[in-house]
Length: 73
Length: 166
Image 1 (cartoon, rainbow over the protein chains, first blue to last red):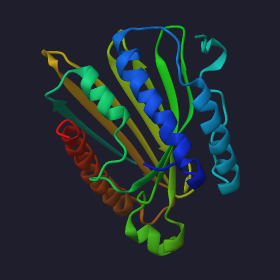
Image 2: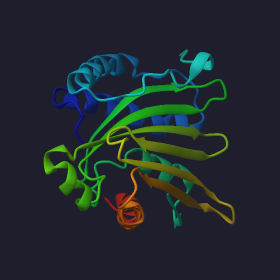
Image 3: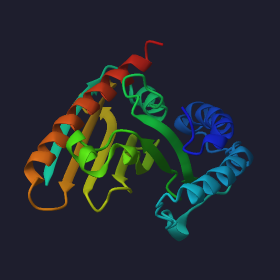
């Protein structure tokens, strides 16, 4: 599966692999230890945000998780 | 406005179905989704995983609408918010189109839960609300979209089941 931004597909695949492994082997099994994918996600996101601006995609930019968001690892 | 609902039972436990559903794309049965990106992801204080995703799809409008607006502009974007609760064993997704919003609104909600009568099975309930803006072609277009929506969702279901056989 490709990214919506053509240049981001490799970064996306790298992140997806990391996420799918963590999701299946840790998160779903109740393991609350840290998310190992934050660095790959950051790189991937920089690319995606740029593509969204370039393509003028009307993303709702509201922080949907609000002040209760807990990303601590 | 048309509301379309359906239910489907998978012969697999909730964790297996959730893993497969999270990776649903690519999906040879639904080649219309051609781009998927995660915009944001995080775990809330209740331990639930929230994800916000952007989907790019070629399909999204019935051909009569495409012929009105021109074939070049049929790439549609959908924004999806999902929540996985590993304690309650629920996976809920909500999506809405963010382009062509002045013409049509397609809101979908999917919920995956363990089957209440058999923990080795999973039940998926889907609901789609489709509204076409404008006056004259309303019911016809909504009917076409709902019909196509039901086909696509059936294909998605078969493909999701198919993932277990690869």
